[in-house]
Length: 141
Image 1 (cartoon, rainbow, N blue to C red):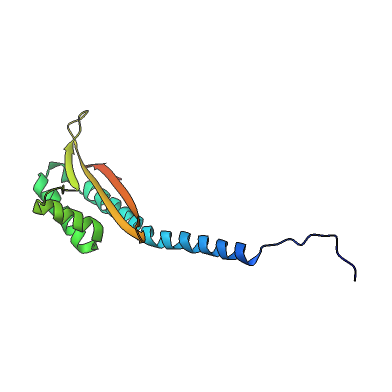
Image 2 (cartoon, one colour; image 1 turned 135 degrees about the vertical axis):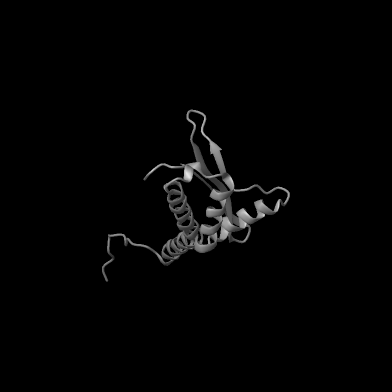
């Protein structure tokens, strides 16, 4: 028999297994953090909706936060609702994620949100995602 001088090339079983394992880890991470980003885009959308309502810039803080609470209940935004009600209850170490802030350069106000979401992933590895967004009240989109 003749021995071939060409070296065989290609992926071995171990390299295929490593590639599949890395792919599974990436997919599982995406499935874990993906819904949180969808929730954040929903928060941005309802904040833009509140900010563009006619006459919203003249309303007081309580009325605006009541509208925010209504949106949270209707849309069932899990992680933000938890942060909102923890901040409202006055638990130590918690703060309200929504604020009405007066802008320094003008006489206008903005609705701002800032919150964190922690999702456990594998064992003692977890993701900590920080979200913040602000929109000027009365601004038309």
